[in-house]
Image 1 (tube, rainbow, N blue to C red):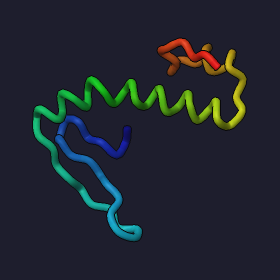
Image 2: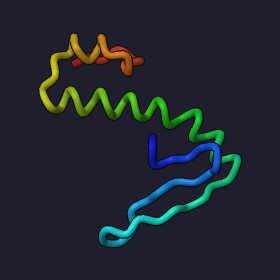
Image 3: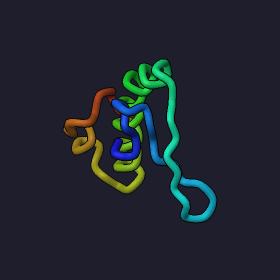
Image 4: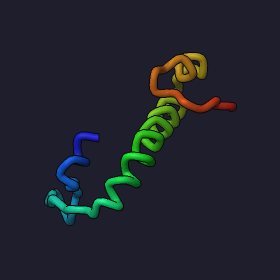
Amino acid sequence: MEDINVEDCSAIVNGKGTKQREIYFTTECKIWIKRFYPHRFRHTYACQLLDNGAPLEFIQGSPYETEKIVR
């Protein structure tokens, strides 16, 4: 979550090529990010572990795991 600065309502995004730009978002967007982003991070992390062969028991014991994963 280092590319998103929730307090300043800004984020670093990748543009064309290797250019990075800072964008700004609204307070309403800030509220949605606080609700949605942590869950999305945990879900993505768990899926990447599973896709790369991590044992299911390891993923379920991870501090980032929040939902039951069924394979």
